[in-house]
Image 1 (cartoon, rainbow, N blue to C red):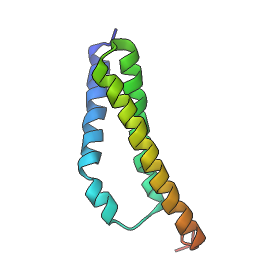
Image 2 (cartoon, one colour):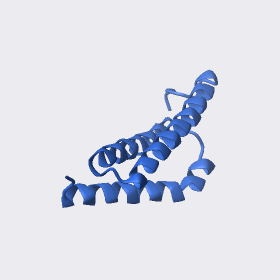
Image 3 (cartoon, helix red, strand yellow):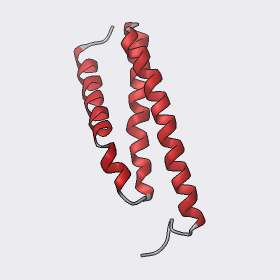
Amino acid sequence: MVDLFANILFDLALFFTLLIAFLYKNFIKIKFFISWWAFVFPLAAMGISAMVMYAHTKDFFLLCLSYTMVGVTTAVIAVVLYQTLIHMQKGEICIQE
């Protein structure tokens, strides 16, 4: 059984995930920094929390959300990894300012 506090935390995580989704245009416009990896962790956490909520509630929406979040997280990891490798080749990562 999922209690009220778990629902509040899940809804808050869903809100922040949607906020990140609506700000993706700003994310694409900025120059690459190693801190882009920070966007991966909330997406992965949302995917995991959707899986756990689905395990407790068996709600079909949560099943779809968990699969979607795993796909989105995988795509974001691929893009950030690609950008990281490109900038590593150029010698732009971990340089002294």
